Amino acid sequence: MSILAMYEAGQWLCPARVLTHLEDITAVLIEREVRLLQLPTGLPEDRAQLQAAAAQRIADSGLPVPRCATAAEQKGEPGYAEVPSRLDAGAVQRSAGQWLLLSAGQARLCLGHADQALVLAVRHGDLVWIPSGHEWALVPAAGSACHWLNLVGDEQALNDTPVPGSKLGELQLLDI
Image (cartoon, rainbow, N blue to C red; front, side, top):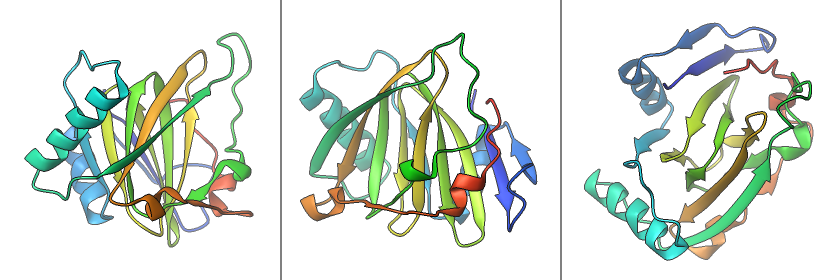
């Protein structure tokens, strides 16, 4: 199930809205130039095949196909540990324009732009376009090991920049 929490100017402790219907979530994301696509279950484990499946899904949507990719992984807190309620501001990056494909696990994708922040629950097979200039951070769910691909049009776009002091670090994260 998809869940989107929407935070507005300075109200980082409680979301202004929480959406649970995919159609509503997709509409809000499109307004902010973010895209959410989903790949079918049973994703290939081979990175090249995974990249090809993502590129095909993007092409089927009529969007420009990425040509470069890097893989990343991060483990969430152990399932028995107290989950942090705030985002680590040091984990926030400014996107150079990229697709993020979660190939394993579950996470919260935090997105910030202007005076707004979005927290999207993502899971295995979700493919999200993060526009250039948007701040983002991926927070794995407790007990989950996340693996993802960053897919971009050219190698320069692989160079996201850290955003020290980002407002996203003030978010009160919901356990979604």
